Image (cartoon, rainbow, N blue to C red; front, top):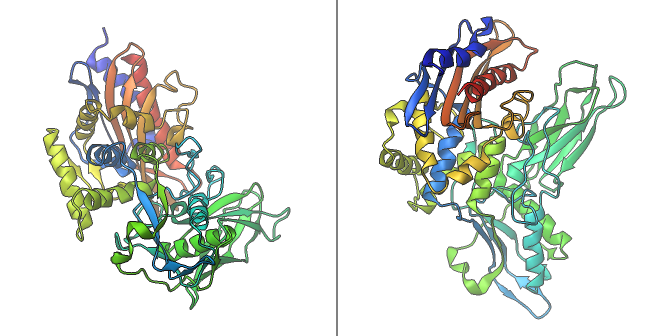
Length: 498
């Protein structure tokens, strides 16, 4: 029979490396069948949670909003349509907080993802989901045209008054807004030329009048650092933006970079205008300065188009798989808006709902700290996390949470972890990564976490949470990957030995 000491030795073995001699390692393994702790190491220390926070965010969303919650994004007219098809008034898209006005939606209603999401840009692995980022806006534009509107003599307006813009989220820097088109990103693929010094080529998706790119970037030497810079962003008087791209991209394949839209409402207005024009609807007025009308205009008789999102369970799926910061960061606001009907103090009201939920589950909130949905400056003890996971497993929505978790060695943020291990495909867990630059060594310091579920080789069901605090690494290393492999090996030892 495996003793507690032997299990601890097996789980700890991957951490016996000089790389961790100045780092904190903490963890817990909890038996979901016998309801007892099987392994604990610094289990009552608050550790940097990073994106393992999304386990709580998405579980809370399933509990409060329900798996079948859907966002509805309507389009209204503010005037009459004459006999020739001219709308004498504005066309207004009313933002609902739907994070999936994009090409993620598949014909069967599911949401698609790429293992390295486009918000995590600048990597050779970064990809956008194939398709047209304006697909949902084009669907709405087609409905507008079908309603009989051939021309608009007013403005195309996006009403984003549901929630004031909250600025950039702290992970990927994407702007939080109740209107989200293509994750509030413009994808810019930079492809180097044949020789160092050659100009790069650009491919932009989606192409809208909101932003134009001036290419001043060149091809770098093989194996040199990429220095592509999109920060030279000038806002023009009409609301459009002009971005001058500088720096160098080393020889090799094209790499996707994200232009993080600073004004989601204006971006959506220009994008929706583009979709309408492409659908054959003439738009007379510029959209950059258009403002929404009085809410009295939003009557059923004036509804000309409507998009209903896939169920929340689908958004949970892709948020967990790719660790989508924007989608997770929006969730506490959605709790506040759709449950508490908040008009201010959105995060305070949202987290009051979560705190009540955790208390009702019998969890000790003194072992947890959060300030946003994606996990910026969040801390959990491993003990808290495994008890949360144990509670989540008793809920009706648990299979939907489990479905969204990355599978070790198979997909999502765990696609490259322990790919040759017997535990490949057996560990369902959320990753978490935080990091900072160390100017003293020209390197960095990584905080890393992994938490989730395993059905072990011998059929035992366990919840686990492993964390590494402050692991240093050199400039030219993906230290997050190295830390991820260590945590993955701890999970693999749990699978193999229990």
